[in-house]
Structures are given as C-alpha cells and as structure tokens.
Amino acid sequence: MTSTDLQAPQLTIGGEIVGSPDSLVVVNPATAEVFVEVPAATADQLDAAVAAANAAAPAWRARPLRERQDIVRRYAAVIRENIDELARLLTLEQGKPLARARGEIGSGLAYVEAFCDMDLPVEVLRDDERERIELRRVPVGVVAAITAWNYPQLLSLWKIGPALVAGNPVIVKPSPYTPVSTLRAGELAQEVLPPGVLQVLAGGDDLGAAITRHPGIHKISFTGSLRAGKAIMASAADTVKRLTLELGGNDAGIVLDDADPATIAADLYAGGMSNCGQVCAGLKRLYVPASRAAEYAEALSAVAAKVVVGNGLDDGVDMGPVQNAVQLARVQGLLAEAEAAGAEVFFRGDAPDGPGYWHPVTLVRGVREGTGLVDSEQFGPVLPLLTYDDVDEAVARANASPFALGASVWASDIERATQVAQRLEAGSVWVNQHPALSPEVPFGGLKQSGIGVESSRYGLLAYTDISVLRVKR
Ligand code: NAD
Image 1 (cartoon, protein in one colour):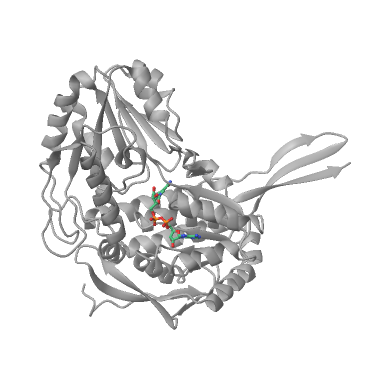
Image 2 (cartoon, protein in one colour):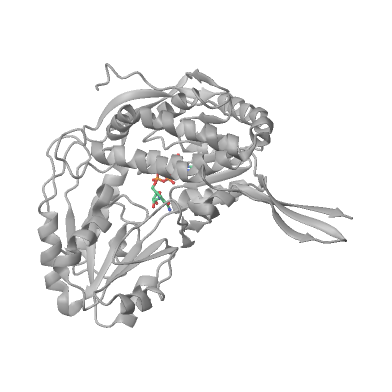
C-alpha cells in the first residue's frame, strides 16, 4: 500500500464519516516520509461529537447489558474481519512488524470480548422488613479515550470494550503520530454501532487538552506520558471528570544468583526490547548479581545478535524503527549522556541505513542510578545492565523510582523469587516473566505510573459509578 492507493480514513461524528478543513500528516517511521494525510477535528467538530455522544447516551445505557454486549461482540467481529487492512495501516503508521500488528489487534479484541462475558449485578446490601438497599453500577456518561503511539489499537480497544459494555458512549482520540488505523476502525464501527456511540477524532495534543476541558465529557481514560497525565488531572478537575490514567513506567527486573542465564536470556531480552523497547511495562532496568554480570552480558548479546531490524512490511523482520523522530532523538540523547558518564556499549546490533527512525538494539553496562538512561523511561531499544551485590540493595534500588508500573524477579528457586517479588513496589510484579498481561487480570500503575486499572472486572467497574437505591418498607 502506498500513499497513492491509500484512501485516508476520516473522522466519525454522529454516525457520519466526515472530513475536516484541518489535517494531520502521518509519517511512516520506516521511511521518514509522509504516507497519508488525515482530517484533524476542529473545535466545532469536537462540540458536535460531544453533542452526538450525549444524545446517544440515554438509549445506549437503557439497553440491557446483554444486548450491549451482543452489539459490542458484533463490533469486535467487524474489526476482526478487517484485521488484514487494519494491521497494514498499523505497521505503516507505527513501524512494528506486520505479524506483531496483527497480534496487537487480535489481543485487543480478546480483551473486548472478555468484557462481553462479564456481569454487572446489582448488589443487595440489605433486604429485611425495614428496608431494601441495592448497590447499582451506573454508567459514568460520555468517555474520552486518549491514547499513545506505541500500541494504538490495543490501547483503544482496552478502553472501548469496557466503556461501551458499561453503557457509555466513547470518543477516541488517538496520538497524532498514529491516528490512521484508529480512524479506520472508527469507520468500520459505524456498520454495527448506533450513531454517536463510538466516534473517533484525530488531532494534536491541543485537541486532547480541549477534550479534557469539555463539560460534556464525563470520564477521561488516558494512556500516555506522565507529563500529559498531570495536565489532564488538572484540567479534568474543573468538571470533576472521572479518570483512569495509565502513565509511564521504569520497570526493574532483578535476577537472583541462582538463575540460569541461558534459560532466561531470551525472555529478559524480549521483556526489554519488544516493540522496539516502546512498552509502558517493558523491562527498562535489568539488575544482575555482580558476580554473574559477564555471563548475562554474553547471553543477552547472543539473543540480540539474531534480531533482524527493518521495515515492518518486509518478511523476516523482528523489530521495526523507533516510532517518531522526537523519540529517536530522546533515546540517542540518553545513550550519549550515559556513554559520556562512562557507560560501555557491550552490544550494538545492525539497523538499516538511510531514511527512517532507526536505532540498533543496544545493550549497555557500567552505568548507575543518577544517569537519565537508568532514572527515566528510555522507551527505546537501549537496555542498561546494572549490577548489585546483595538482594536488599537491589530491591531498594528497584523501588527508588517515582514510577511503579511493573517489576520482575528471575530465579530458579521460585519460592525465594516470590518472597523477593512481594517486596517490589509495582502495580504488577512478575516472577520469571516480564510483562504478562491478560484480559481477566487487572493492569495499572502504583505511584506516578497511574491511577486505576484496566482489564478484568475491576477495569469494567472503572467505567461505572456507584448509585445506591434505598427503599423503606
Ligand atoms: P503523550 O502523553 O505525549 O501522548 C498521549 C496522548 O495524549 C496523545 O493522544 C496526545 O495527543 C495526548 N495529549 C498530549 N498532551 C495532552 C494534554 N495536555 N491533554 C490531553 N491530551 C494530551 O504520550 P506518548 O508519547 O504518545 O506515549 C508514550 C508514553 O505513554 C510513555 O510514557 C509510555 O510509558 C506511556 N504508556 C503507558 C501505558 C500504560 O498502560 N501505563 C501504555 C502505553 C504507553
């Protein structure tokens, strides 16, 4: 698919597929060339979408839960029927290999479908001769889903599924870097969803900010940076919007001294480098015992040496480019700063020459806390290998971060690893894996990694408010 045969997907407002006088250019990160221009929603179009969502809300919430779930299942089926087209758009805009793009959409649909099997029962708190008291879960109202560029499909599906099932219309605003597949999915959704129930508006950060201020929106479900998360909290305060914030992470992994490098190296590598290192809950600081550091450097290098970096549309590619030029410059800057501070690059892989936001797989040692590469979220294919002398020290260093999204412990003795894992501060703590997510398991961050969770029954409840009904007898 080239820019000449790609029809630009449009906005969806009130059941209509519409253009806009404003536009956004979208760059393919594998070529650094604009591959499509899509409409960017104006302020008036945001107002129109919010009005359409509020108009659709009463009928949508009045449908029985099972009926909403049947419709949402049909929506998931339409997305699945078009997965080839959507995956291709996702690779073009995001850079990830086509098989990973398909996997991302398939995984997102599994989450949507899981919400279609959940219940929202009325809880009876008292039922006696004096009074009947019921706890009811009611929809929160119009939801805005604002997403990041690393997993545009997965992140939007994580929000759309529970929001719709719980009885709320949704307006999705994808990242300006990756709006294309989300817009197209919005067009497809109009085949099965009533007008105004699911709308997609592309736009820049300014559109996101306008959404968070809008009085006709009642909840913001946001996945993105800590910086934007803070701005959203402040802006949402004015109209007391409900918030789910999935923010950054700087996940630590601690390898205990009894682990076997050959057994775990491939999983450690994938934990850090999946999606070109652009995973919120990716392994971003790897702590290994000082006495075994050389073995881990060797084992990780052996895995990294097999990785093929290239255009995600080509066969046999394991890893694509960094998603955008700003992020590439950030990763390069963090690496340069670490090297200037004495870090040693012990593995540097191959990456294509020429245009595109390429960064080789890079493994670094001889770096400590106090360096940006360790203290902040690098969000790219550069992994620091840190050493420790005793486990208490490693736990303290792992926990000394304002982020607390995921963390992991790796060992042969699972009992001992589990003991150490319980001392790590994170929304998800894994043993011998990193990350591991599934539809029935809540996922979210502690500390500044976020507020609330997605997935699971808890993720569904996040799109409801509690309303109590007390009937005096
Ligand atoms: P970003 O915060 O720059 O942008 C995310 C979205 O927010 C975009 O749609 C953007 O237009 C919008 N936005 C930006 N400023 C806004 C504002 N003031 N008000 C409202 N909306 C605004 O993040 P990014 O660079 O696209 O994504 C990378 C970040 O996302 C990383 O920090 C990563 O860890 C995080 N992330 C977190 C999770 C999670 O589940 N915790 C998952 C994926 C990514």
